[in-house]
Length: 543
Image (cartoon, rainbow, N blue to C red; front, top):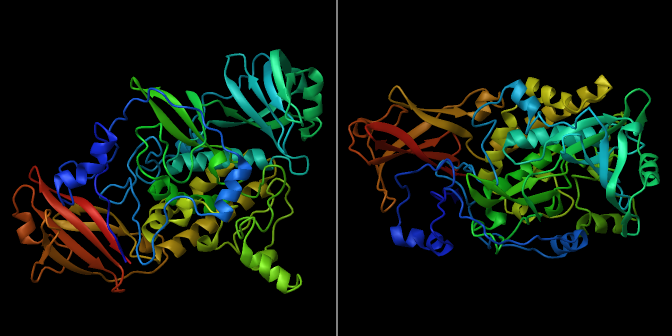
């Protein structure tokens, strides 16, 4: 099958123009401003409502039905909001970071921010709290007036959930998503005071005035280090008006900038690979958050991933079940196998070996199979992923070196070096499995450029030592940008730029179709003469 780049993504003066643009402009494949690196400035959002989702409704809707548009039989829907190079442009959903421009160890360690940890001076005011659910927590305000959501580790697994939340937030940030600033926080009971008018939501879901006794009762349910005090993860409040979660399908009808169905966004389809790597099986709408924020004088919606306490070996309130990531919470197949075998059927994941390290929980790499990984229940964008979506994500995972992974894991502040080593070793092994799985699905050529009158690229399978080397065959052709017809250039079968391309006029296009042994797997690079310079303007992949 062939997945062609969807062309330049443009937001016009109105949504109607956006949809009519291809018809108005004709069948051109490329435009003067391709490849688009950043979507145009958003239209201002004047009125938008807060949205609440029911966790139970979300589960049953995705388990029993198939919301969103899926691939029809014998046809594939290519990813959208993709530029002509196959990349997701910078937007209110996603920003190219580590893969596009390698981050330093210091930048990876810092993540989304390091300037706003809760102040160590003065008291911490508890302005609200909740005791319902499995993860009690506070909302606190420090001496500078900064607010944080504070969540704790379970008594059985000190450091597990808080470390996972901090580590994964930094990885997701480096991978390009918007996330909150998460900090490991240690405090003593004497630092907490109940703010005037503080409220609490009790176990029955009722709101009432908060007292010091409520704080005591919450702290009885969380671990305490004799020397450092209570440990938690403090998540800095996001700026802007809170709008509630986004969905992994459809669009927001009250956001004029939200015109691409979420199930077809490359940055959400590819998120599957990132979640598999980090064990984020609790990826769902309720662990996302939209905000209405002002930037450059324009109010627009910004989309965030939040709440990573159920990543790595943690399930927030307990160690992760060995089943997590291997099966949906409910699926007919596994349930039938258990029923008809009278419980004698032993799934592969039941043989996983986990360390006896409470801070790790249950996280492993030996039985991890990237292509078979599952979230807790089906996610429309994940279900729609294609080989070019997973390649886009896999190359970013593979961009993390061993040293960089170990540096990010350090931010979890594990007190046991064995726990830190186990998490880092697993992430390194899972990274390598991801590269091996997804680079084999297509010809993994990337970072195309023109150097010294030759077409240059990286073969990521070779670069990461997944294969020793390979030979390439090349066929050059003239490319008609209006009709998308190719006219082969006789005898031009090397990576050297053909003479007709070098001597071409302004705005002429050429294509180089590259194979690496498998006739079904090809990459076509498109080049253009612009301002006297030859540039790579597009990439198509066939597999």
